Amino acid sequence: MQRVCFLLKVRQGRIDEYRERHAAVWPGMLEALSAAGWHNYSLFLREDGLLVGYLETEDFAGAQAAMAATDINARWQAEMGEFFEALDGDRPDRAMKPLAEVFHLA
Image (cartoon, rainbow, N blue to C red; front, top):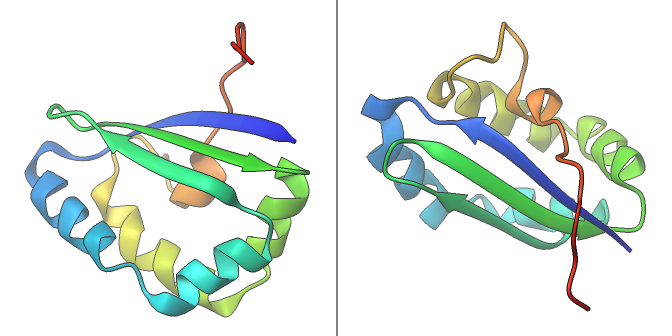
């Protein structure tokens, strides 16, 4: 099982709305994530907008590709893209770059 952690930055003026959106993630999006192999997926948001994401999956590249192939993900990413800084025109799901794991206490 791969453990994946990534960072993104939510725009300061959009933090409250970002929290609200994630309090009511579309049921179809939740189903798509599970079907694509995203497990134990969590998002943590600091008050300054730093977003830390964590998930576990058998194959991160495959899980990303499976989500990219869904219509619901395309719609979600289109709506969520405006919440983030420094995407350089990319979608949030393509901008997340996994951090290198340097320690894990099993």
